Length: 197
Image 1 (cartoon, rainbow, N blue to C red):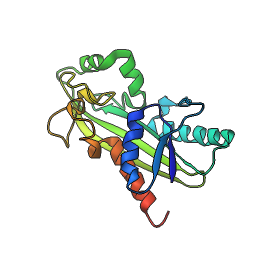
Image 2 (cartoon, rainbow, N blue to C red):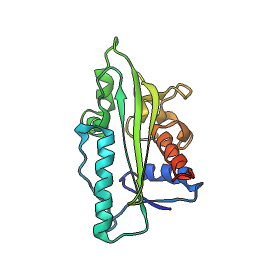
Image 3 (tube, rainbow, N blue to C red):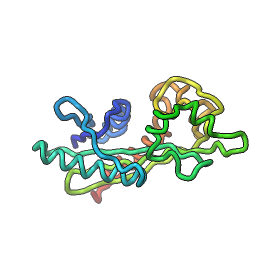
């Protein structure tokens, strides 16, 4: 299956490509006129609603552009801090842009929980059927920014399944199997591989 991934993040495309290639699927970034399309995202409704909204808009775009014989993949994710109720969640990127990682760290007072999790929702649709999977990576927020790898909250996120380093300190690709996105993509891979599809 040829899958067009709706994202402006090339790192996400690369990760999806690695995870789905073994099943014979190709993953490319969805580009229109050489650019990644921008879609309305109802962030206030959460990551599931954002993924659903992007899927509807992407399928409509393919129809308008006359692109056939492909599947569309969408994904939305966020980091959720235990100290706050479902926050920053779907607005993780906007919060990071606004206050930065240092700003996030300054919000976590000494007596507050540092527990956190990355959550992802990934969906693939061929226009007739839709497959959906979720992934969660539990961890905690570091005391300081550590490492420059990954993106987003990776330099302050220490995964429980790791060795005490932040994702920002891990070598690229070394942690692929334990990320929230990898778990969601692996869930999709299992659904696509299932004989009942």
